[in-house]
Amino acid sequence: MSGQMKKGILELCILHEVAKKETYGYEILNAIGGVFPGMDRSTVYGVLRRLNADGSTAARTGDGESGGPQRKYYRITEAGQAALRELTDEWNAVRGAAEKLGIS
Image 1 (cartoon, helix red, strand yellow):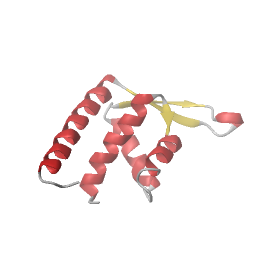
Image 2 (cartoon, helix red, strand yellow):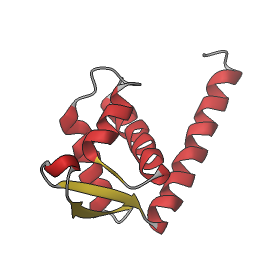
Image 3 (cartoon, helix red, strand yellow):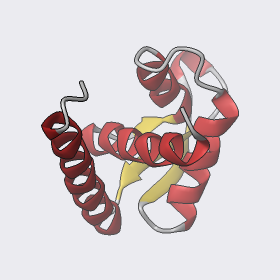
């Protein structure tokens, strides 16, 4: 998968996961890694940093489970909800066009 396509799809997937509930990077990585085997950890964390920097997510630091190390928890913002709607619309348009061409 090309880098540009991966970036857009990952952004959509990460926003989708964060919209479900407040979550942390490793949990997001596990969810996405199950669908995209071999997904590079640094790529997912890079998208998370970018989404946080552009205001699509907000982050807080909290304690890990069972006294583990602190984690950065992400939640979606209003701007992130808008971005998620836009990316979902774009995804549906691309998927619909591909299906019309017989690409599955």
